[in-house]
Length: 274
Image (cartoon, rainbow, N blue to C red; front, side, top):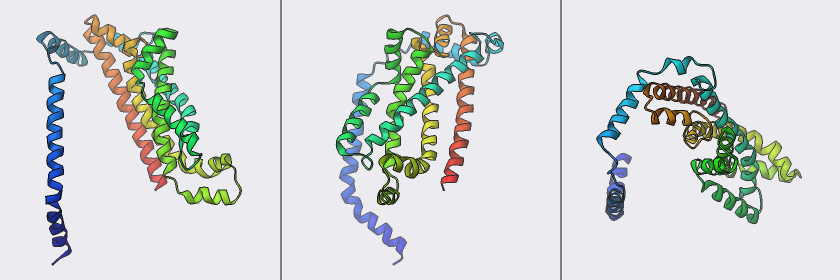
C-alpha cells in the first residue's frame, strides 16, 4: 500500500472522532447567526437611505474640480496631507512608547512581576478604540489635529507593543544566552543583540499600523479630530455630492499609494531577512 493511500486511510479513520466536534461547531455557528440577526435591526434601510448612497456613488464619477485644484486650507491636497500627518505622527509617538513597554512585557527579558504589570497596562490601552479616544480628546482639549494625533498615538501603543512582544519572545534565545555569558547588561543585550534582529520586523509592524492609522485618521475627522473626515461629513450632510466624491477619491488614492509603497518595503525587508 502506498504512502498516499495510508494517509487517506488514516484520515478516514479519524473522521468519526472529528464528526461530533464538527456538528457542535456548525450548530454553534447557526445559533450565533440567528441570535445576531434577531439582535440587529434592519429598520433603518429605506428608499431615502438608498438614494443617498446612490448619489454619493455618483459623486465619485463627477468630483468637484474646485476642491481638487484648490491649494488652500480646504483644498483636497491640504486635507489629505493633514490626515497623513496625523496618522504618521500618531504612529511614531506610539512606537516611542511601545518599544520599551514591549521589552518590559516580554517574558524572556524581564521578571514575571514586571511582565504582568506591563501586559495589564497594554490590555487597558487596547480596550479603548481610536474613535472613543478621539471623542475624549476633542472634549478635553478641543477639536483639531492635535486631538487626532493623541488618539492615534495611544491607539498605536496598544497594538504595536502587542505585536512587538510576539516578535521579541520568538527570538533565538541562544543570542541572549551568549550575551549573558559575556557579562552584558540588559541594556547591552537589547542594544547589541536584539535590536539588530528586530529592526526589520518592527519596520514591517509600523508600516502595517500606519496603514490602519491613515484609515482611522479619516474616521476621526467625523468627531472633529482633524483630517479630511470632518469636511467629508459636512459635504455629505449638505448633499454636496461632487465635493464628497472628490474627497472620497482622494482618500482612495492616498490609501492605494500608501499600501503600494508599504507592501514594496515589507517585501524587500522579508527578502533581506530570508
